[in-house]
Length: 250
Length: 307
Image (cartoon, rainbow over all chains, first blue to last red; front, side, top):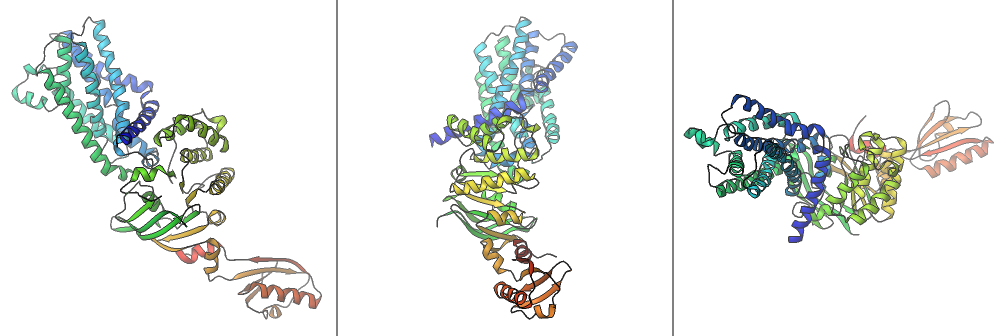
């Protein structure tokens, strides 16, 4: 049994490699992943001069993670279906877990490395991480979480990537505004805090604030626990729904 | 003889329409099994169930002894598949496509490199191995897809319309490859619209119509089943009396088409003896003589209906 899991994991690495070569290593994808959060950041920076740079950088890391880890993963399966490569994949001796895991790993790597760009921007602006290990662990875990979210967003059985992108944007943009990126959690009204607690981005932003500013709204262990639970929930749901919808795409 | 595919009571329904309706058949080890039928007869749905891509509503499928529903990974491990609407990854090179498939089938890298090199050479794609597939012609893509299906050296190969819409050169190459694979003891499940291809390649043929198997037998036996008669086409050095020819034993109809005389007969041997005796006794020469047996097309039309 152990060797079966290991064998399937190795096969998921083949899917990861394929995804990176086909979908992620494209100039526009990388530029888009960095530019969207940067533009949001600059727009907010010009309108909110009272907020500290380290607070804004922590938000920029959160936004970058959300936008990069969910940028391509929602459209891979619809795209494969449209390009007539999905049927071939489904005939291979790989489980749906393996397929989803491969797509997720590619997204994790992309999310992880692109999210280091705002960290570097922070360093250039003299925002030095206080808890570097926590920041790196947080980025790693969040990349898993948001990649799983991306795969959950891919579950509607449509073969038009544009439809999935629309649904994806409808979920991602509101998340940015409810997750304590531009408004600190402690400044939110009670109902705002309740809504924020439902977003995984809230906990990641809390981790980045702790790492850069040494302050956090929740205990740091709770932030990690929440992200782990969100990751598990997104992954399990994505696998369950894909199991039902994958054959509908053929 | 050992069966590599065992199908019992296979049923699939879409929106209350039975696409596949209680299908039973077995495919023997080492044979090329043709699966024919008109559009919408249930061919592709059956192949998709056999390859574990979609689930049947009812029935069982055993591939190399493994139930495809209960042990999909074990069953799929033995398969090579060329789906009807499949495509290679156009943004990857031919080599990268093969390596991807090798990875998904767990083929060790030293073995996969050697096999990929051999397959690309056999399919005439080796010089283009590092080119992206987006620049390939349809024939080249299809040859690559077949190479991808062979990278794990499968015991059983599913091909859904592998030569459909291809140029003659690619079609011939693929057919030759299938014959070679059969020579190596591989089992091939071939779905095709091309009756001549099925006739040339297949050991046995199943004809499916409206989701049900109409008949399964060898091409030779299938042709014997048809009600259509054998035909003799003959030309003589001078004009002959058709009424005399119609007295030949077993001959039911004689027509003069202008170029030649066409005779429909129940018994070719007797009719041929009669013709040679007839020509000899009247001192005339037979200039050409052809015998035409019923074709697989005739059989197909008889079982699925048509004009």
